[in-house]
Picture 1 (tube, rainbow, N blue to C red):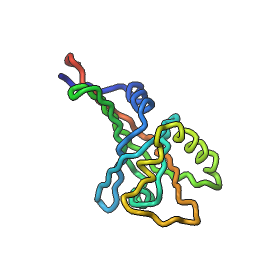
Picture 2: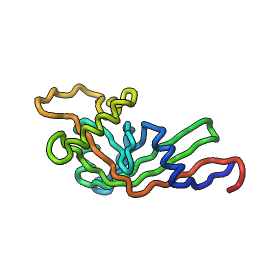
Picture 3: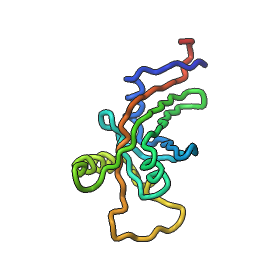
Length: 151
């Protein structure tokens, strides 16, 4: 088994065909990583969350990283790493249409709201808008995959 670098087009295909990523953010030198559902549109990954640690941390430091993997066996995998910038999509104002687009794309994914919406403890019911849609504006996308012959 060997590992080879994937082209940007190949990386894009892996990301476009998936819907679950690992989102990494950092605050005060401390990293934090969580699973998240996403929808790709152009150079943006659209995501959803309830308020919490990842949102607080991305608001403090908008530089993030995501990993999307594809496995078809123990020795057959593809992995794409994306770096980008967090941008919140408010349900009103100048980002309203983009927020609706994000919701429209995400709702096509099965159980799209679960990774960002479920919490291990009961949450208070808020009278305000608790859902947060956001975009990761892609800066860089690189990937590797296993192969049977030396590249």
